[in-house]
Image (tube, rainbow, N blue to C red; front, side, top):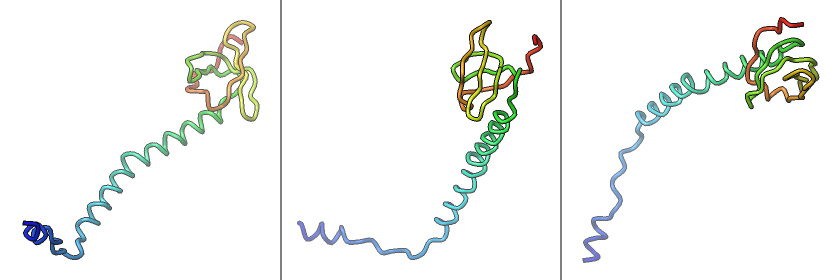
Length: 105
């Protein structure tokens, strides 16, 4: 009985080199690059440009949903006025979006 199982469990003959496998893997990588990696890089570059372009007086929204006006731009942070006499300092990466320049003053 065991001898029959050992005979049946012998290794299947190898088919040799199969180039279609490598072609399919290459195509999957190309599709992955154009649909996922490339658009993500574009979004990151756009976000980086947006953050670097923030200046005094711009309206911003943080990732936490806080709306305010930029009062001061430092190297790694922004001083944002969220209400009269209420000022908060945010890291540059905490800014989610930038609106139009504040018209009040």
